[in-house]
Image (cartoon, rainbow, N blue to C red; front, top):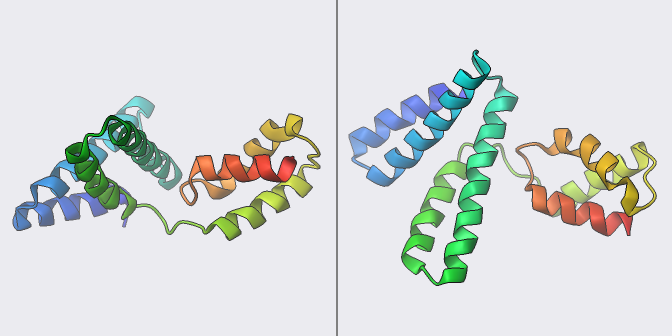
Length: 147
């Protein structure tokens, strides 16, 4: 079952359950996927759907950070609920140790020796962990291993 089909099924269920928050989030995610599909002029691949989903998650995390900094607890609580809903559709996330092992392997594969090689490492690494690990965590681990 594709992500869009899962979203449609869950939207129907949220309507039946009268869960307005979940319904709103699912509609936003579905809309983002459909807009991306229209932009490309075709149905999205599973990887492209994951990219859109990751982007939605990142936007919410960024907003959460900003609202937290501004002391808006009401919005922080709302966004935490949205994050939980969006994360449900992502594949299981890799642990920090698993990401670290992938980072070390990629560094040796591309023969990186210094921070100057960071772009080369990230270019080879991100397709391997796309949707399975947070980009900021990957970036941090690459910097640690290259220094």
